[in-house]
Image 1: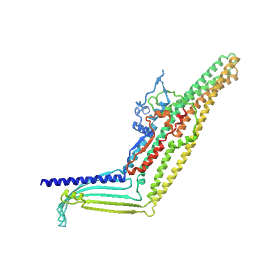
Image 2: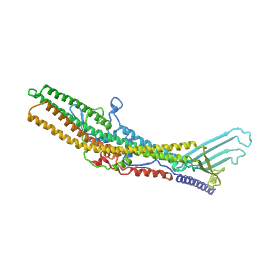
Image 3: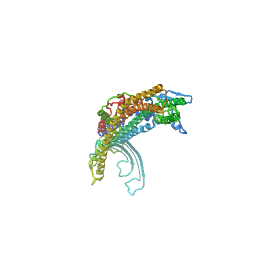
Image 4: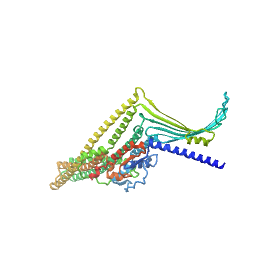
Length: 604
C-alpha cells in the first residue's frame, strides 16, 4: 500500500519535472530562433548626458505665479553665486566672465530645457517599438455549470466543468508568431455516453506562423525600431542645434555688451572733451570767440548728449537680451543691475584650411546630420515598401499533445508519454489582384526618399556656402582690427596737434573750432570702430564654429556643460533580431565618435 503510494508520487513528480523541462526548453529555443529587441540605450558623450541632465533637473523653479514672481528665478545650488556690489542707490554691479554667462544659459535657459525633453520622449517611443517583440504570458480560468432538461435520455441534465490555461506567446524579429500553452479541464458529467463520469483532460499545444515573403525577416520587422532609433538621433541633433544656437547667441551678446559698455565710455569721453571745448570758447568770449562759435560748440554738446542717450539705450537693450538667456536669480529682468563683462576678447589670428572646415561641417553640422538621418529613414521605408509588394506566403504549423482519464496523474502521464499527438502543417497564400495599395505605397516612399536626398544636397550646399562666408567674415574682421587701430592712432595724433596749434597761435577761429570738433568725432568714431572690429572678430569666430557644428567643443562652452565625455552613442540589440540594427548603430557610432577640431580654441 505504502509502496504504491510512493510509486504514484514518484511518477507524479517525474511527470511534473518532465512537463516543466519541456515548458522551459521550447520557449528558450524559440527565444534564440526568433530573436528579441532591447530598448536599452548605452550613452556616452557630451550631448546625450547633458540632455538627460537637463531633463532630470526639470523646468526651472521660479518664486511663484503671482505678480512678478514668474520672471524671478530661484537660486540654483548647482551654480556658484557671482560677486555682487551695490552703490548708494541700491543698484547692483556684477562682474561676469564668459564662462559664467555660458554656464548659466546652458543650465537655466527655458528654450533649451523645453527642447531637451524631445530626445527622452523619442527614447520612450523606441521602447514602445521594441515592446512589439516582448514575450507575453497569458492565462485563463473558468467554471461552467449546465442544468437543463434534454430530450435525449443519454444526456445528463446536470454537468459542470472547470478549466485553466496558461502559456506564453511572442512575435519574433523574423515575423514569426508562436504560441505555447498548457490547459487542464476537469469535467463532471453523468451522461450515459460519457466514458468517465469525472474526466481530466490536459492539453499541451504549440502553434507557429512564419511569413516567408511579405512581413518576413529582420529588415521588415525591425523597421519601426530602426526608424525610432533614427528619430531619437534626430531629436538629439535638434537638441544639439538648440544648445549651440543658445551658446552662440550668449557669446555674441556677451561681446556686444562689452562693445556697448565701451561705446558708452567712448561717447562719454567725447562729450567731456566737447564740454571742455565749449568752456574754452566761453572763456575767450571777450577775446576772439564770437556768439556763433559758442553756439556751434553748444550744438555739438547737445548732439553728443543725444547720441550718448541712444548708446545707453542700446547698452540696456543688449544687457536685457543677455539676461533673458541667463535666467539667473542674480541677473533677472526685474532688478536694476549693471553687468560688467570681464573676459578679454581674442585678437590672435590663424590661417584656416577651408577644405578641412568643409569636411568638419559636413560631418558635425546638426542640420546636415538631421538630413542624413532622414535619408536613412526614407531608405528603410523604401526597402520595406518594396518587399511588402510581394504576395503573402506564410508557413504555419501546430502540434498538440493531449490526455484523458478519470485520474489526473494518469492523464498527465499520457502527456508525458506523448500517447496522443496531433499536428498540422501547411502554407497559406494571399495576393491582392492589382496590388494597387502596395504599389502606390512603394511609389510614394520612393518619392519621399528622392525628396530627402534632394533636401540633404540643398542643406550641404547651404552649409558649405555658409562656412566659406563665415571664414571670410573672420578674416575681414581681423583685418579691420589693425586698420581701425591705426586709424585711432592717427586720429589721436591729429587731435593732439590741434591742441598744440592753439597753444602756439593763441587765437581761436571758426575754422579751428570746426576742425577740432570734427577731430574729436573722428577719434571717437575710430575708437568705437576698433572695438566693433574686435567684437565682430570674436563673434565671427563663434559663428564659424556654429556653421561647422563645433560650438559645444569650444573651451568656454565645454567647461560650462554639466557633463564631459567622448561622443559615442549607440543602441544595443540582443539575439538574431538585433543584427541589422546593430550594424546601423555601429555606423552611427563611428561617424559620431570622430574627433573634431574646435575653431575658437584653435585660434586662441
